[in-house]
Structures are given as C-alpha cells and as structure tokens.
Image (cartoon, rainbow over all chains, first blue to last red; front, side):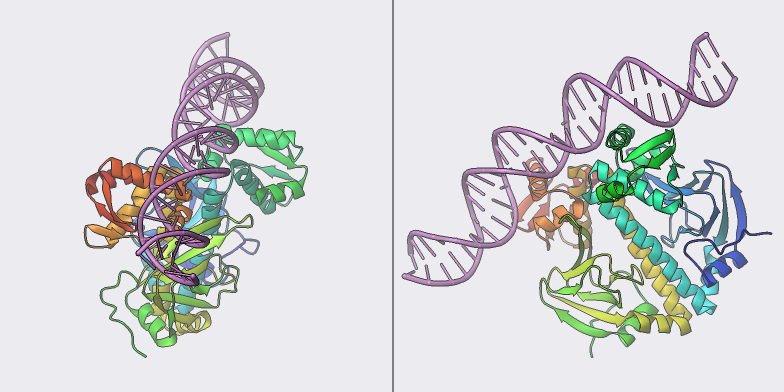
Length: 215
Length: 215
DNA sequence: CGAACGGTTGAGGCGCATCAACGGACGTGG
DNA sequence: CCACGTCCGTTGATGCGCCTCAACCGTTCG
C-alpha cells in the first residue's frame, strides 16, 4: 500500500492523518463514483487524497442541495454517528482513505491526541458549513457566484481558474438554477471582471472587483 | 456550586457533561445578554443549562443570520479553535456552564473518553446545521415556517407551543422577512392548521398537515 | 449525419422583499 | 381615568430578483 506525499495538503495534520492512514485503506474512485449514499449508516470516515469529492443531498421532493466540495486533505463524513446526512460522490477521478469509524473510535479511546485531532477536524468542517449557511441565507445570486469564484481562485494558485464542477453543481451548491448561474457568469464577463477562456476555464481579470462583489 | 439534574436533558451525556461541569463555572444571563461576540477569539466552550440561547452573525452589509437556537443540554461554540463565527445571546433568562477551551483540551489529552464525547457533541451540532442548510437552500417560505413550528412542537410536549423568539428572530433564522413570516402564520391559520392563542402562543390544530407542509 | 449533453440567452411569471399604513399591548405621565 | 409614545405584529400595494419554460448553440459521440 502506498500513499502520496501529504506535506502539501491543507488541513488535518499530525495524528489524525497518521491514524487514518494506519487504520484505513486506500480506494480509487472513477469520476461519478459514489463514496457513500445519504441515509446509509455512517460506518466509515473518509479523507480525500487526490481529486475532488462532492457531497449532496436529494430532498424528498427531488431537489438537490450540495453540501460542499472537498479537496485533498479534507475529511468527510465526520457528521454523525448514525446515518449519513449527505451522499458523497467523486467529482473527478479520486483517491481516498476509508477508515472504519469503530476503529477510529477505538484508537481515540486509547490515544487522546487522535481524539483531539478528530475534534479539530470536525470543527474545521463546521466552520466551512457555517460560512456556506450565511452565503445561502444572506446573499444575492451575483454575490454567491463571486464567492465561489473567489474561493476557487484562492485555491488554485494561478490567474486562470479551472472549474472542476458543472453549472448544475454550482447551482445546487448555491441554491440557484443553472440559468441564473450562467447569467451571472455572462454579467461578470460584460463587466470585465472575468473572461471565459474555455467552457470550464476562467481568467480573473479584476480580482479586486471579484473580491468586492463577493462581499 | 450546584447544577440542575441532567438526566432529562437531550444530548451530551456522560463524560463531556462531567468534564464540563468539573472544569467549567456557572453563569447566569439576563434576557438579551451576550455570551460571546462574533469574531472574538474562541477561548471558551459553553453548555446551556436553563433557558434558550440564540447564535447569530451580522454580515458586513448589516444583514443578520441566526445560526440556531440552543436548549438545555446543548453545547455551543464547538465550531473552531480560532475566532467565533457567530455571536451567542440569551434569548430568555439563561444559565450556562462556561469552560475554558484549553482546560477541556487538556482534559481531552489525558482522558480519551472526554475527547471522544467532544467529537460526538460536535457531530450532533453539525447535523443540526446540515438540516438548517438544506432548509435554507431548498424550501419555500411556508415549508420553512412549518418546519420551525414542527420542531418547536416536537420539543414542547403539549399541544400548545410557546414561541420563545420574536418574529424577527424567526425571520432571520429562516432567511425571510418578518412580514413574510407573519403572512405564513396567517395562511396557516386560514387553512386551519394552527390557531394563535396568544401573540407568541400557537395551538397546532392539525399536526399531520403541519408535518406534511414542513416536507 | 443525427442525437445527446452542457451551456447560453430570451420572454414571462411568481414568490418574496420592500415600503407603507394600521392595530393592539404595554408603558409613562398627565 | 385617559392621552401619549413605543414596540411588536399584521395587512395591503407594488416591485424586483430569480425561477420557469423554451429556443438555440457548440461539442461529443454513436
């Protein structure tokens, strides 16, 4: 079993990473594959190693809400000890580490630092969700789209942003329709804030304006 | 130092409760008092003992988003190790236990069960927020109001619900205006689903309909 | 080539926000 | 006791932002 180098990864440093790596096993997922499904009993916890994972929930009336996009280093399914609230699918080809919750639990029972790091990983996830909550609640369509672009541009180092997700994904993440997302993109182009250099490729011409509009 | 009996309280049983009670100190808060403020450094964690606490965030442009309402037994400020994302205020007269995060952290380092229970308390909080997220994202005004009423009615045992919060609080929780919340109440009355027995007192005439409308 | 898919653009409608007026519950001072 | 203001909630008129429906375009794949 081999693992990719972890030093460049964003959060979850130290013992959780070690514990997860030690106790879990490695999986590869093709684009679109499902890591777990909503309402499944939450037996495992996951850490993304490569690629991007999307969590989503289909409501009873068929509407879809995307919980978030998870990048290498992020932990998923820290949610609850019972059933998964969201599904998780591979947005791109992915690698992840899966670890049985009961193993991690057992490790946490004997090794305090593992438990502590688990807590911290959970709080990170929570903060992410909180800002998402505020976004959904209190922002206009343009502000939301700008916020996503701004986040993606912060993540990717260069001037050009690669959008790994479809318009539908963005719409379901922001609680908008694809048409509205598309219109906001067009509007940002007309305002010379961004320029589309491909269907899923964006150049941020005016980062300050983008930041300002994201509010 | 005395504490109320805890056996009837909803979550957070066992060692966290013990640890929090052992390490923390007791505070009383008048209605409207602030437990902590958004963007303060998050030095403490809290547990509600009596009364109701509301968390809220004022965005840069002055809009308010309520994070949630917390009842006896609930833990607050598990969010992050850095700054508080939300403020917390006493909605009614309250008692709470405050515990220094570093003490709890230290306890978690030596006592694995404390750390484990902290994790579990965090996941509970997360689930709460996740369903709130889906509500904000994917529901109509009527559905949201019904969901709140339904939740409150589940919490309070009797047929009559006491609304502890103002319309403004409900509106900011659901991302609606007070006018819209008011109109939904009126509509529910017209449909014979609820009956107002006081300004902040509701009788649920048709619980099934309410449940159904909450979707 | 045609079909399927993802994305863009336009026309029209609906849901909720906004603005404004009103009403009842409370206080305070006459 | 009543006039008075303030606070909270309700109700109505109007408008805007986003959804809905629909047509269209470019790309991909059979």
